[in-house]
Amino acid sequence: MEKIQLIVPPEGEGKRVDVLITDALPHVSRSLAQRLCEEGGVLAGGKAIAKNHRVKAGERLDISISDPVKYNALPQKIDVDIVFEDDHLLVVNKPKGMVVHPAAGNPDGTLVNALMHHCEGRLSGIGGVLRPGIVHRIDKDTSGLLIVAKDDRTHQGLSKQIAAHSFSRVYQAVVYGTVKADEGRVEAPIGRNPIHRKQMCVTDKNAKSAVTNYKVVRRYEGFTHLELRLETGRTHQIRVHMAYIGHPVAGDCVYGPKKVIKELAGQCLHAGEIGFVHPISGDNLSFTSPLPEYFQSFLAKLGRREL
Image (cartoon, rainbow, N blue to C red; front, top):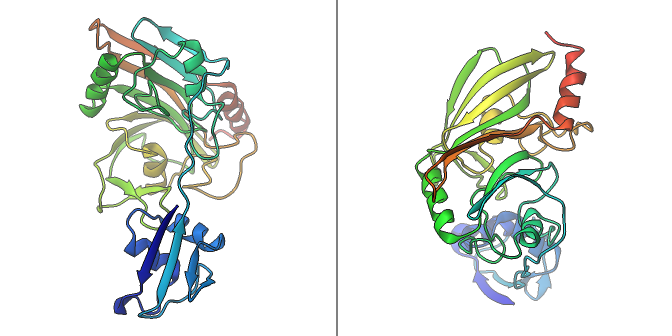
């Protein structure tokens, strides 16, 4: 348990307490500050205060932050689609809805749990105890291909290719609206959203360069099927970039409309192709994953109103 005493400075007069805590404590996100208030972890004058409490200069805040829950990635017998495997790495076709590694809210049943069973624990250790073998990730509700390293040398070699942007990664997505240009390029830096800390956004503050190239596959009434090629691999890159140009990914309730598309149960986004140089053998490898059933079914529904 971390206990912090905070005296409101003069410039903090009138601020919401959750905003003040976030500004004063860099390791505390806005959402965490709000949760602490909701759980009675923020006191003023010995009394719990709400997240919208307006603080006064000189006011003393007593903040209690519980220790983070520790998760251990344990082997679990879970079926996983292995596209390629040798002594050094695997290429996995992750289904929609599967989380890549254990975290809050998903302590088990993840791809890592499945791989630890499949590989009998033989995975690279660079990612730590929660992310053994994980070189790069895709979101829970994104389906498709990702690479897993069995040893540290392979992991390091793959990571260098990612840093050099020499990976080939092609996605398929359905986005809202009619994309007018047959092809285009989005070059906009991506960083952490300063208000919603679990989200990313296009920003110049503490951001990294990000480039997404897209090409129209087919247009429908109210939607467009796109092929997207990544030059960089930032967190939520496609979802953020598509929302940035006014065409969020269909079913993405975080960066797009809050309307749930029941046929999708999450965003319509599939990592369909991946290419790289094998770090040990030096062979050029490339793999493809056909559109999964949920994606094909959605396209079939849209096909009845093709433009």
